[in-house]
Length: 377
Image (cartoon, rainbow, N blue to C red; front, side, top):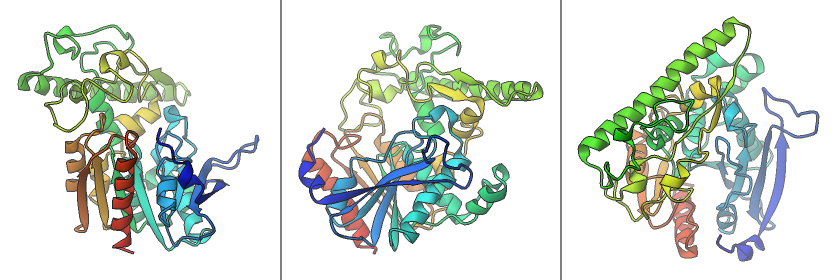
């Protein structure tokens, strides 16, 4: 990791723990909503960023000291689902983000809030902003939760940073299409095996088309089973169940750099060589049935970025590092095109997923974000 000790000497950090409208403080003392607010030492900034992920702990987000050292606040915010991806439900995550947004407005004295949609958190923060603009999740909430949904504080600016288009989209793009039995990690259709050298790389256009179709079919098979299994269990008085998911490091772009060309290394994914990573746990490795339908299903999830971004009336910046091995230039272009606002900008710059390989590249990214925000505040 890049040494940021010089920046840490210039900033202050405050831990925040708060209840949610649909989740109180637990008996052991923990709050469902937790985070760390990083600010310039001795200052109360009037503009602040907030970043949240579906399950990754963003409290000590890597970019916080870099933005705070430039005069901004940064709330690395976690919902009740941090470290609990298998239990995720979008409607409650949105309410938890609203708690952090309200704290920035009412307690931190922030006038301008910038949503930072980073990595998988891009579509989650996009969904939050879309719900703050025009709520659609009311059928899933009641009482205090429904009231909170209709009172979500809206952010002023939106930044997409090395973000996936949507949770169902990225999982499907990464799925190994050659899986023939979801209960057997070994079962494989060799004609679709991306790691069989007879198939590539390089992969032919015909193989790519067939592979992508098979990935979507795999997602739909799991969705069909999840819906029928949930109905079966509910009829027996059982609310839900867990199930595993295997082999989800199979995006052809991780092996073949000629597909969606960029400056990335291939073969490579976030866990190393895709052929090795694909045999190990990955995103979506465990789910409840309800979580699959809420977060991962192409058919039923509301975590698809394009649908949410189309509602935006928020000035937006899309930033994509060209050495990223899991988010690709076409993903950034799709996000940019989906944004419904006229004031939008796309920047393809040097750097990996977390800009972890070069201090200069991280500095350049932070400067870009701050200059864009400063021009609109």
